[in-house]
Length: 207
Image (cartoon, rainbow, N blue to C red; front, side, top):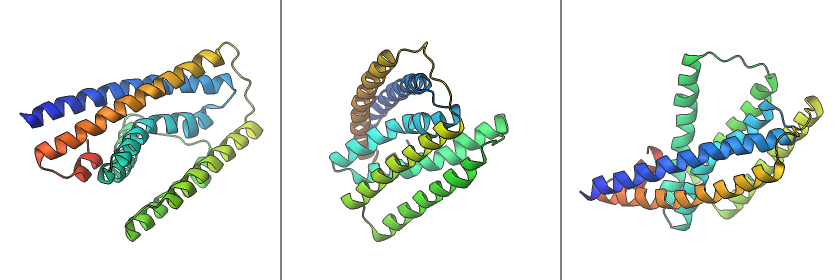
């Protein structure tokens, strides 16, 4: 019975987390258009980071609560799912044509380097704060390079029909909602793992 209750709580919190995340992505994309950012740059930054916010919330809260298995497994599992299932099924539905060659040359290499770094950290068996600082600094630098390239090569005009203040306020409110739901998701996942007798790693890497 405890397993059923924990599973229901997890599904409910995940559903709300996804709903808030979806709305957050919409608002973030509108905010990006208000600043004149191209669709490719939006996909690489606003949408990419926005869709990862639920995972960020779950992993961060799990780390604070000393559930490192959920934190790491969540990152690894979600990325495998993104490449193998999301990209795979989407390409079956409608084949992709990558017109921006820089996505394959620059961003593909960055993805490989990030993966190699994670493998190295997994090999040594721990992720120290200095590694976290390095990764955070790199993503700031990477985002800056993307936006700078986009501004120089695409130069879209800002969409003046979109209110920057309204969309920014919505982004902040929805972000808070994502973090709150992330907390419930972690708690439910831990309860489910304990009730079902499986490791937190399995819950984090799958559900």
